[in-house]
Image 1: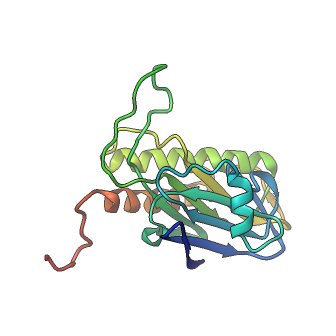
Image 2: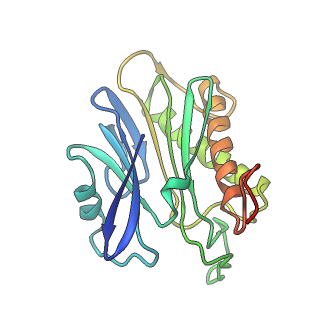
Image 3: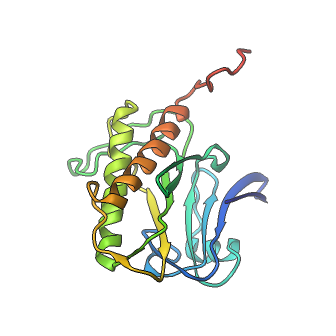
Length: 217
């Protein structure tokens, strides 16, 4: 994972880039490179609050290294990303919860704004085992369930935000796992890694949060 910075319209913005190279298959809900297929990189690009460009896919393609990759956006500060690992499963999350949402909110219901800080919840995860298409879909379900559990445990009454994105990368060769639910071997490890990363990010996102041991000013 590489953290880089660029300047757009006077704002200094960060980006997280994973360069996997060939030999990987990914499933993602991202605007660029979403779906299931071979991909060589993943980009989580920070954008300004109130992002208004009408060509986000082209914008992400410009920011990426070229070729087939996955690109997602967030207004959260990507340099505050959180990560966790469990038995070979790894997850990185950027967490912003200005406007938390319930997935099944009543039509027309307004979502609360918690703070001036902005962002969304983006998750990038990897597993060291190949998977069938069905198992990849199962894995996205597992990641989403783990994310929601983490947010609720951190004290946020929501299932996420309306713009969350996810990406899972697995090898494109080798014996394929048939399942990735939260009680399967790899699904359980994935769930714990995602849960830990998102929970850490949700807790540290709170306004006024200080890392343990930080000096008071």
